[in-house]
Image (cartoon, rainbow, N blue to C red; front, side, top):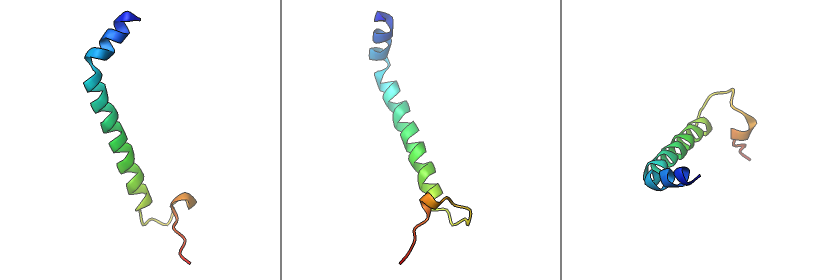
Amino acid sequence: MHDVMHWLQINASVLAVLVTVAVAVLLVCCLTCSNCSCREKDDLFHHHEM
């Protein structure tokens, strides 16, 4: 357990960069899905106009 904590302390910046990149990729994927003009979109992404 001590070795794991020591490894996390040493590589904290690397882990932070990896998490940031993963969140950015997830956001880009979600935004491209919600802006898609395809007819077969999910109801979740439909913006019904009144």
